[in-house]
Length: 540
Image (cartoon, rainbow, N blue to C red; front, top):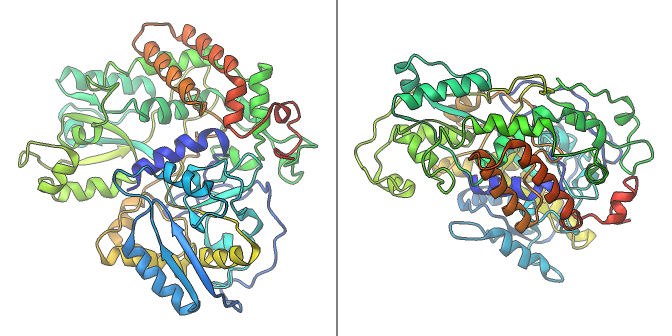
């Protein structure tokens, strides 16, 4: 499922990359606007769609060190690539798995003068400056399909760029955050899924009155990260005009930015302009972007109506929300698309001893299946709300970055990645896992034409992408400075518990950002000069 990988992706990219909104070209999602930001892209060469072009033959070795450990998928992929590039040796050296701190391992590998791996999960190391810029190749003809590469792979759903505006990461599966609920409990209490925040509070109260935990969740990341991003986004739609590229900026594109019109109701507004990270931080320094506002106070006031009041008793220290849901001790959880196949599989064999041990559920044999469903994030309402609710829509599956060593090696590695991240390669990757009964995707696949089992297709068929709330920095707690983040999380906890007022929370948070501003921008890969001159490309 790579659940923890996704959480870390959110944490590490929230500050130093652009987390763009959806372009729902993935399977089973609605069609978004066609306009896309063209920051850092090159000219679009012609291609003959659907017809393979002449393939250059390569010879050498490619070392792959991802956090993914799918040996079955790799074996199938390796066999398929061997047929088209027989002289290329693929070496599978995954560094993930239980108990492995992949980010630390990756940092050590990349610290070497010439790292051994050619392909890594670069989302965990966004400040590394020797990754290949995929934007230079997105319109290049894929020799294995005859299409432009971005017609094979959805480049627009999730955009991982570094501080220089370079696309250093490609991903394979889309993620959508939503609510899972126990239909049996709702039916018994004559309840329906809430359609706004006030209804969510009312539904939670009725469930609590019936002696059931309304919401099982986690303060480790779900509430302070996902939910803050989802709802902060409703109060900050006016930030788009502050953080977009302006005329004269290094990443300004007249075709995109020159025609931009801020529409707070557009769920895909992020695709309509180029984001200038330095302008965001300049806004914080200049005071045009602030956290001591009525909007932040309103957000905290609303969140405190649910948490910790209607969560499990050990909400602030527990991460056992899913087991509580599975045991029918809790009626609702917030989770991602990766849990759709997981819940289905668990319901089919609820009392499997090995699975119960994994989940640390001790009452073996006592679990009973129940009808379950999902609903979207209930919007907050009120005069301070600036736009409709969206979701956290990011990426999971494989996070692909190429370590740019030299032109010859990078050309060969890029050839393999083009093969892998298009139907010929990714179908083989999927088929190997399906054959071994180990294919559990985290969301709809972003590679065009790849077939998945019917039950998986059906599960993701009703996923509706709403647009990504995880834009700019809509998580007001995150700074990527460890001590500051910890202090901000504790501050937020005090506000939820009523130990400080929502207004005081905003004031103290603003002080935290102001006091630690220099260290925050340093961790984001920027300098004071970048903030003073946001028109200049970082690092130049």
